[in-house]
Length: 339
View 1 (cartoon, rainbow, N blue to C red):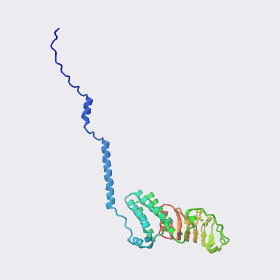
View 2: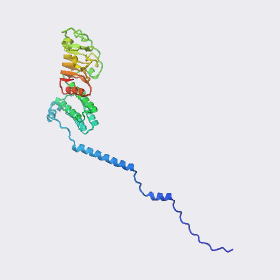
View 3: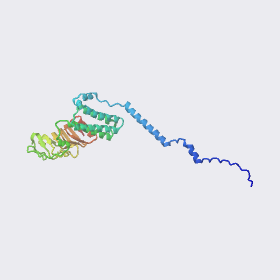
View 4: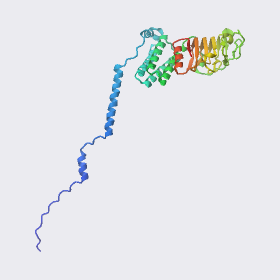
């Protein structure tokens, strides 16, 4: 059987790639552009970094510390007290100066941290029984005023600065006058009541006119109230020195007027008062020395004339009135009237 001519076999062409494979091949070596939000984030980050570096440059090149009074600085550097304790005093002043810088740069939080550090250093100096020259307090108060000046309406900064003023007042009181209270009173340990000796009269009840205790000391075991338009003086107390140390530390020695106003004309004159607590509001105080007393001020009216605080602690309000009283005490002023 004869077959016809055979057709030569032609090799088949390779299979063409699919559309999906062609798409992958085209995009395999091509870089994908970043999404729009990523580009915006990079630009924003770069702008933030530039702003930070620019801000630091301004602080470094343009800012200058607030100059101190050269005469006060010279007095601080040359005084005996400053030479003995120069390092810690300058630590405190540098902390307050740093607060001035931060306040001027509108960094209120940084200023608060700096004055808080100064407060802690002052507390440590008080506990360590250090002393300081009057010029130190003048420099510190002037710097606190400068720190508050750019933001005098900031309640936060006012509170922090006032707390530093109060600690300055306590520090000034800690080395003023006679030796302070006993160690038990300082540490807060309870003191057992000491019964008065037969030679010492107790002012818990009204004392006869012109009666006197031995050496002018009168032991007080209960708070006293003073009537309006009355002057409480050594003749009423029975002596010039009222010893209230047997009373609880938080107990009031003289109950302040309920109104906390000076118009009640309650007056205390010519006494030394030791121990317990005393609220100053609403009373005219004249020629009075507080020794180891917890002194309170509740932002009412007060009149201090020739009043001294020795080894006292202070519980003052942190408003403008409390700041005024604390500043006066820190500067050693014995007379101030707040209406």
